[in-house]
Amino acid sequence: MELYAMKSWYDNREGFVELEDDVLSIVRQVRELYGHAIKICLEPTTGQYVFSENCEDGTERLIFMTDELDARCLERLLRADSQLRGHVDPYDEHERAQDQLWADQHEASMDKVRDAGERLAWALEEDGRGTGAQILVTKDIHAHKHG
Image (cartoon, rainbow, N blue to C red; front, side, top):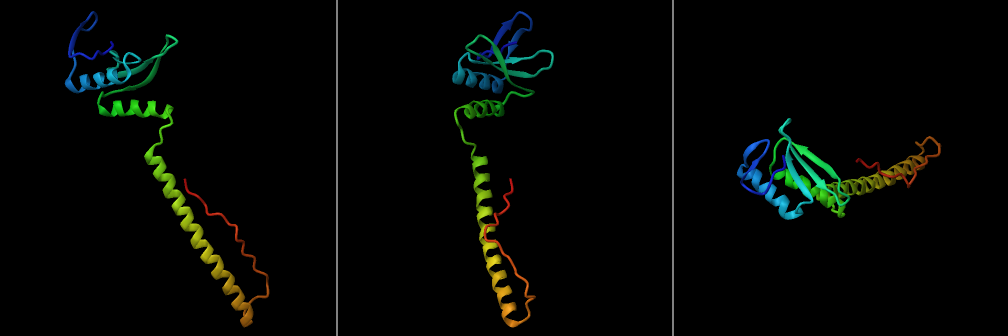
């Protein structure tokens, strides 16, 4: 049964239908944003709310189903739509920046360790306590990125 942006109406199968204020608010907001391109139905057998898209080619495509119709549903719909328009998730962007900062800090500390290791090996050789073996310390070790 499709939900309309009105408080109450009569449905042939369900009889008199009256929406709670929070449900009505979500249905109205979806209608204001998307017109008739997106519809919300109540599936009578499961009690779930079904969001679907009326496509230009005449087909109806499922977007998602949910047990509760609240502001999270509208947010989920907007997020799904914004992904198509090149939206950048601020949380993901922040995570990437944090990962890069960690990698930069790790690389800087590894540079210090490598330099100290080279100086220690040279000092031991000069002091006669070295093994005489060649010590290779590479400068191009890349920091392991966590992700």
